[in-house]
Image (cartoon, rainbow, N blue to C red; front, side, top):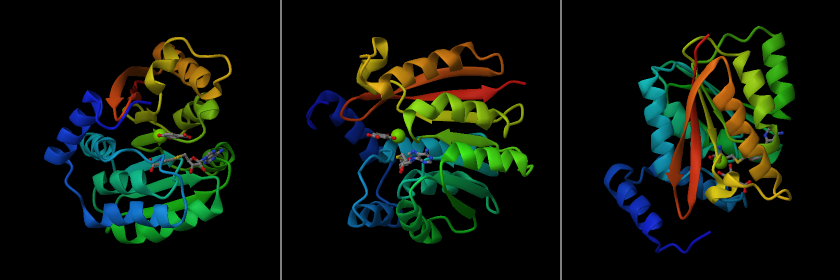
Length: 223
Ligand code: SAH
Ligand code: DHB
Ligand code: MG
């Protein structure tokens, strides 16, 4: 990972200053996560703005997130939903879910947010079995080795037109030639290949810069 004053970081800051001015409730969500000792592995403000815009562009009313942490990306997604919308976000660790629930109570008025605790694959299977209606947008951002499983399950909670997004799929270029010992890089490369070849998806990976280059996969469910 590069220093904070690299060209990439300066461009990211430039975009953030112009387009993603600080919002008190969103900043409080990050402060609360920090105060609770959660790791700073949330999306960046510019990535959050991108999630918000994609949610609005999709006209989404129902969104699903896999990997809540302190609820920062959740807040951006929730704000992109139409008033009266619903966000279901899945988190393994109860302490993280509790932090997210507290923050989300104040950061997304008019949106019904449910944080569900447990291993996401099991929660997704339970939702499928319970007949959960399809989501308009899905954001995958939990443990990287499970991404293909989450995609397979998310497709069972989708309809033609559903947007499926996944974070951290470039890993500063490690996916070009993934080191065999880096399970996340190996998994991200496999995920990208699976998405590219998937008969039910049209997709692209969008490089995303922070202090380093990562990527967001963007797919639309075609059938
Ligand atoms: N989307 C968040 C960041 C998520 S970090 C944001 O940008 O603000 C990834 C999260 O996935 C962590 O909080 C981790 O606890 C959770 N996670 C890891 N394995 C999981 C699993 N099997 N099921 C559900 N959540 C999981
Ligand atoms: C990690 C996870 C993320 O989702 C992310 O965006 C950055 C880092 C991590 O587990 O280190
Ligand atoms: Mg991420």
